[in-house]
Length: 270
Image 1 (cartoon, helix red, strand yellow):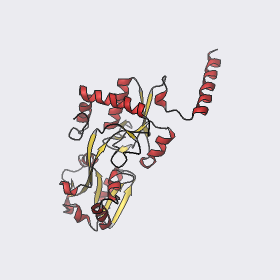
Image 2 (tube, helix red, strand yellow):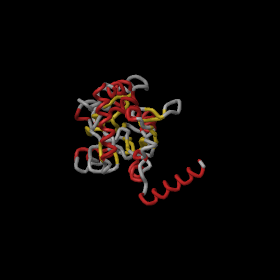
Image 3 (cartoon, one colour):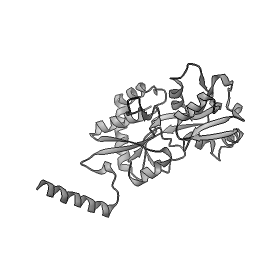
Image 4 (cartoon, helix red, strand yellow):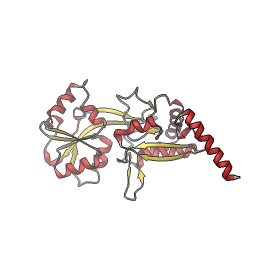
């Protein structure tokens, strides 16, 4: 009887799916899962640690949201340049991984921003480079489909376009870990990168070997991170936002930021 009932139930589910199309798992009142798409090579926001576990600031936030709601968190690593395909197909419910909302405001349904971020350049201290104008003729690394790349290709920002065109080469990497390995080996002269990721990449390396170019004039852009949902998915966004607001109010959000060294960057609830 149980096998027969299960088969009938599954047949009904399959039939309903064929009629209605892909239904995001968050809407299933029984499963109550939230599938988060993230770049698994983007520390400290999301990455695989030495134990093979997916960890990071954003994944901790997502886990806390799910714990508060009684949901199951599904961590789904994705190719960052395929994130829109993953979201549109329904294989993920949101993009939550150091995701810049600036310039994409109308492409997704967003939570309120929770991190203030800047795009900076990292160079070897021994290079003597002290401002971005001195990168003329240099080889610069950047991640594919990143905010830094978008800033360098921003046709409305003539200064950034002129800066990009002054490089001898702009190399796009799949991830910043590889870009920093090439910086260490001298294969590239600088890395254009989010400031939080830059701090994380510099910290474990030889003290004083790499530096960020300092000063507001050396920044490519200033931006904000938020959680991106499929355009029009207000119901899920509102649920997640309400929980994040509660976390900000009770101090949980701040505790997670402190754990990852991002206290100075967070803006939710301030």
